[in-house]
Amino acid sequence: EHHGIPVNQGDMLATIMGFSLVLIQGWRTLHVHPSLEDQEDFFYLWRVYALMMGLHPEGEPHSFAHIPSNLAEAEEFYAAYCKAYYVEAHKNPEGVQLAKSNLDLLRDMVPAPLASLGMKALPRAYMQLLIGERGCERVAVPYRWHEQTLNWILTRAHTVGLLFEGMGHVLHAHVTLAMFKEMIRKQYGHGTQIMIPAQITDTWHARAKHKTKRHRPAHKHHNGQHKK
Image (cartoon, rainbow, N blue to C red; front, side):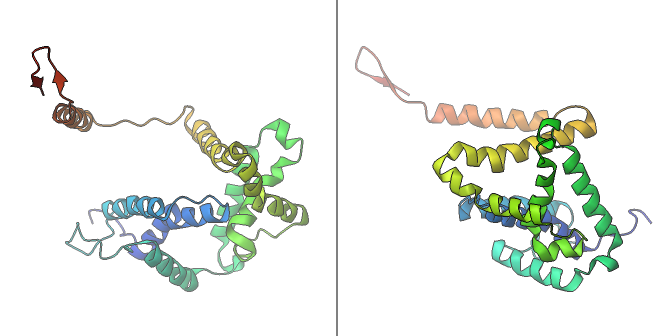
């Protein structure tokens, strides 16, 4: 009556996995290896977000009981969810259309000079690399021989990065970031904007000022005395 149809918490948690666990799994596939501590920290950020989105027992807004407590539990949950709910392409026409739309968007973002060199095949090759042959079958994106060749190159790009570290970072980090920035610019007509409420920044400044005062080093005066 007041808030509309409730969201299924299992489906919502699986969606959160797409922004946390699945992203980390993608890093591993691309041979981007942040430390285990960094991975757990990243996952913790999304655990808090999930709690804020209402993934908690009824009447217990501060309880993490419905959310995996670490990456190992997250992988166990997501594997069970996929086994229970993933279906073939003919049973999931909306998912097939969504995958096609996402792929078309990425292909359209390839700059014309690179497109003339055949790089419009790169988004599809990355899709095949990241979700695998079985995943491609579920969204009706069949493997093609030239994209399989690109897959082979992409999986070995990290080796080149070991010799030329900058190349590895550009290939798997900066290019990806540039793609998302371009998606935001095309959608909204400007770059990303992050606004922090004034009361939060004021608190940060007050804490920083207090910390600076507490840890200010002693200064020696000419009379031999010290002043904190």
